[in-house]
Picture 1: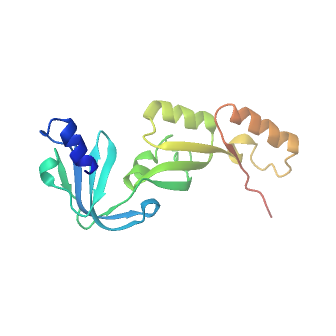
Picture 2: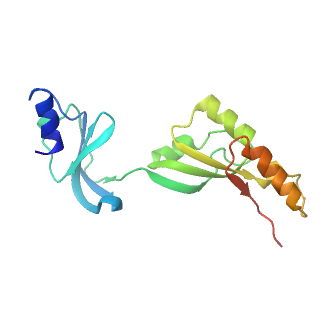
Length: 170
């Protein structure tokens, strides 16, 4: 007995067993070895079943995703969520989410502005951040000591930064 039929049996054999059915999408999930046209059943906010054909009779809502790619949330390891030139913090969250990305690493931000933006607008994503050198050190500084770097890492690390993005060179 598959998962959907077990849930139907547990509910006395009646009622919807799938909250949402994504029907006929091209499913790409390398972790599961799936690369084919499939239906995806969602129950209680989690993927319950992926199969070539799932009965629409068991679904409370059906969305035809024919001609679309269905994939687990993607990771973008280099984003600038607040944009350039002092744009509104958290500006990029909606854009990133609309592309299927669920986890990001912001590559160089002011932790204070970044955290203020998350508090004001929310994230809706899994977000990690690196402190940007332009926010940690005065403009034009070309000679950083190990003490300068450690100081910045400690101060911003206490605010949540995972590290420091350094952009120096000839």
